[in-house]
Image (cartoon, rainbow, N blue to C red):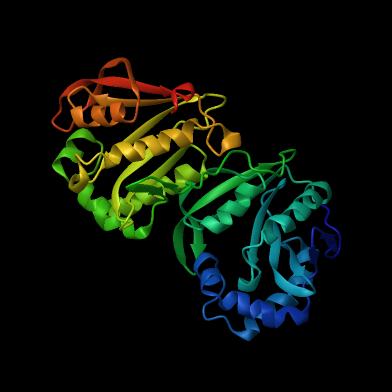
Length: 372
């Protein structure tokens, strides 16, 4: 790499990238004292004014010796954050970024990186740019996703933060990759029915989810659930749901009572982003307190309608949805029939139940043209 001797100035889309200045000190201190910055980065805690002065004073030296290429993000003449690139081997760079609290929420980092990365690939000539973050930093991950980074996975102990090793995500952007999202990121839309709503999961769903997943019937039909099912298991499930949404692989809702907004079940679709496949599977479970009231049926019908509606009408544009239920799970089959799914066959000896028995799965489907 043959970097220029000092930072360039890049301007466009309402953003300026420039060299850091001593005048940035006050705003840099505010950013680095922000709780979110301290939670997700390795800035010193407590963060003192001398930390900012020392960091700003080293920017030119770090640039010239090739250890870090950092630029300030400026909006309307004010320091708003920083982006940086650090050498990773002979032909790689590691990317970092962060914003001041006042500058968040306006897609500013994405705009800045769409200027920085073309410059970096042209001038610094890396073959790959890597991004990493502490697992759970969803706002940083969404930025990386927006500009085309592909998450390769979660690495245990990847990130060191103030002497502690934490699990982290790692993602890559190769030379020539488009600076646009490589796959969908699903945000569950709010779907309202007469007696139920489908909404995104929340942390306060954990107690009711834990109770439902310890129910003997739920445990029998969903044999893969941990036993006993703890609140930690429920929180881990919420993280798995978020991961599936971020990867564009599945879409899950909390099934909630319309009046109380309390969790009464869960509905999911998976296999959504498999090339040009237009047929996906739908699954569900209900809290024991609401079984027999047709609330799950109403929720499944809402989800199915959203999945099968054309995209121009606000749906996913699927052609077909499939439900599979164990042969003796009559209640689940009634839900499928109540939501207008049609029995189409069986998958022989395909389901292992909690008691060790193996049953056929009865298959139902619903086609787009059959929506009422």
